[in-house]
Image (cartoon, rainbow, N blue to C red; front, side, top):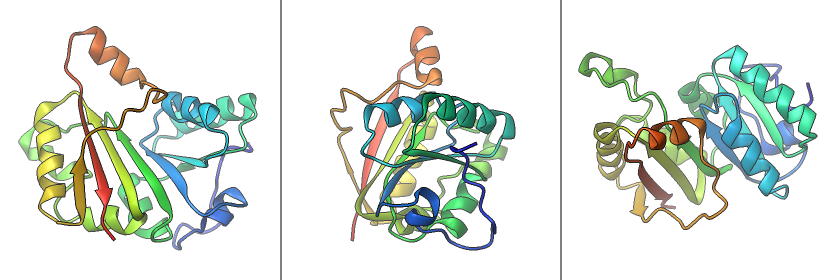
Length: 194
């Protein structure tokens, strides 16, 4: 599978060149699911590099199969847990844009510790992003939206700005599902400070 990035060692950091064969920065779809968003945005922007990170093997196989069928040269998919990837496998400052779209909100209070964005993980997000890099977050869960905004704002490592006017920003399967049920979508954009 040409789309798959299978690291020879899960205990070291990887450069953009090692993942894609070229480039300086790339975009990451963290928790890419079956790749609907990832593959659509990669088709729209063949000049950009995209890495989908997903922990579930069945979903990742779908991403790779569809990516290979489409012949996309600018997409790779990695099986890894999101926070581990950001902490231990990313070359610092190499991610141009981090897409964190409709993650599990872990709504029960006893499960809040499972949320990727915590006050103590914000520096990890910042370290992975290039200066001026973007963290784009979307959810249908208002409490999780407020949680993420509060965690990121508490760090002073990011500036929250308006969601960009991205006409070509594909909807995710979850977004379409929640919108069809009349749920509101909450979007946040954070810019990494140098």
